[in-house]
Amino acid sequence: MILDEIGVNFWANKMNKLTIKLIFCTIIILLSSSTALSFPAKVSQNNRISHHQSDYVRDLSILQTLARQENDQAEFALGVVYEYGIGVVADIKHAEDWYTKAAGRGHIKAQSKLADLYASGNKLKKDYQQAVYWWSKAAEQGDALSQYHLGFAYQHGKGRLLKDYKQAAYWYLKSAEQGDADAQTKLGLAYYLGKGVSRDYRKAADWYKKSAAQNNYNAQYMLGLSLCEGRGVQKNLNQCARLIRQAHENGDRGASKVWERYELWEYQ
Image (cartoon, rainbow, N blue to C red; front, top):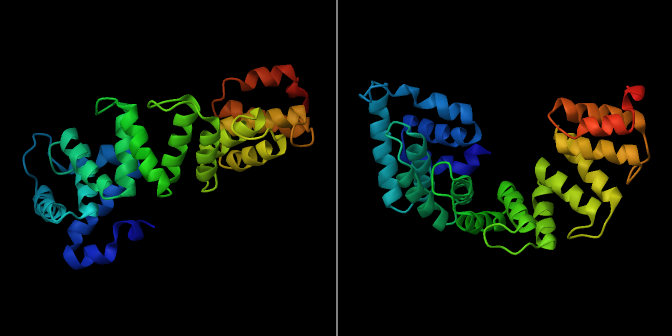
């Protein structure tokens, strides 16, 4: 999958192996925050050039050359490089500039990444309207995480969007069908409450099952509650007890109340 996303055949013709390694690392950083902390350790603490960093300087120059030729993959990679300070001094404004260039050319990961930065406000000034704008762009191209965030924005009326439960359910469905556990739970809740869709406890339980199988504690809680109540599924207090216990162990604060209400200790 990563090979397809970064267009490895193109890069192989244009760059040496060290450059390709750098691009792989930048993509991996987006998937693992712990990697983001450990990878820049190749640069010495006093910011002097180490024998590793000389390779980064050369590779960075190649990336910049390709980026100036309006290559969206290189622009996106430079955004990651500057955001996390990989071989350079971290500079969030430079990162924003490169992400914006790539996002403007339709690069899905850049659009999603830029939206996340604007929404969090941890590194850039918080701007939920801009976040929604870029999530919309990425969601329309099929990015599951952006579809989830866009659904959430419609559900809660964020980024100057009017609350629209129908639109929220629409985007949750798009994301849920791609396997996003949070979207599956949100869609289940939409069916459970009848918000944006017709109330349907069976469909709610079906989506909870998909999400609970991915160890989502909110889904475990809601599926357990459905089993206790017999809504959308046959009432089963033994299975309810198992799921409520799992939800509690995974961090759901409301699970203990269901445990007490239905005296689930009797069904362990």
